[in-house]
Image (tube, rainbow, N blue to C red; front, side, top):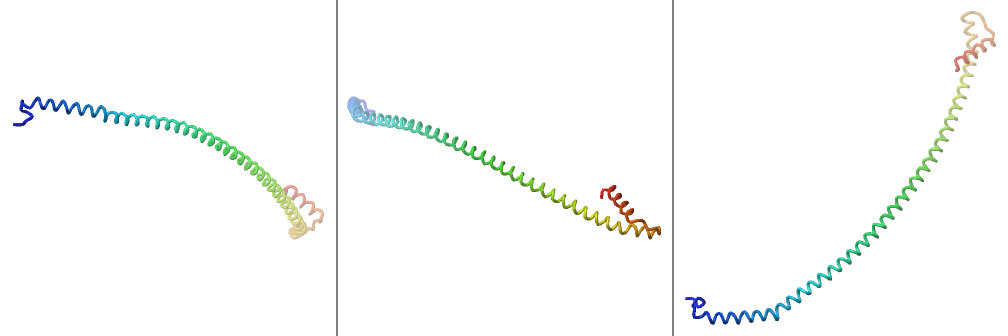
Length: 165
């Protein structure tokens, strides 16, 4: 049979159990628990310090973020201003170029019209001269009558004016 289960040994087992319990209790109370307590206190103190540092870093980060946002807003405003100035300058340059182009185009159109009118006058003068020479001959060949040169030129001039050639 097992000695733990033998009732004769109960008293000595209870005494040794009480002695072991008391020794363990005293050892835990005087040595282990103070160390555990100091470790937990140190850990808590470190956590508190870390939390304070984290809050300080958070406040610093918020300050830096606000500065960054302020700088970015300023930079965006400056860029917008530069862009608006550039757009105005481009618009002014475009307007000046358009005006210059329009002026040159109008001059070229006027020169072209003038040249066209001069050419038209030369051609009409040539047509009048040719007609003045051909009409009396044609009338003579067709009718046998020779018209006066002044009459033929007068009729040709009236025809040219009526038809606006």
